[in-house]
Length: 127
Image (cartoon, rainbow, N blue to C red; front, side, top):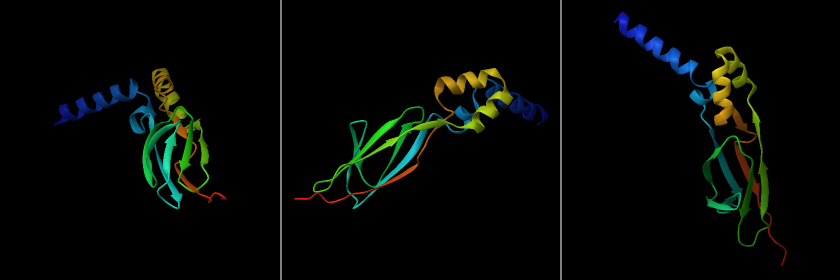
């Protein structure tokens, strides 16, 4: 039993030493919840169709995005999503050593999207 516990602790130590904190706990993607009023708007992310509102999508955290909400008879709403580096991930990585910093920087895991929820209030087009 003691050998098994020590083995698990050594294995976990290696995982933390050779991975970034954000890569382990968060990953390189972020969930974005998209809705509109009225619902049923088509959602385009960087020009690619993703579905209709309400919708939850998974996006890479280290990129920026242009989100468009389109619905027949309504004006198109455009929202820009940017990102930032989570300071907490940097602190944890630095405390764990240089390798976690390199891994999280290379994978983009320490980035977070600036928004997690977007609700587009659609306005009717004038005839």
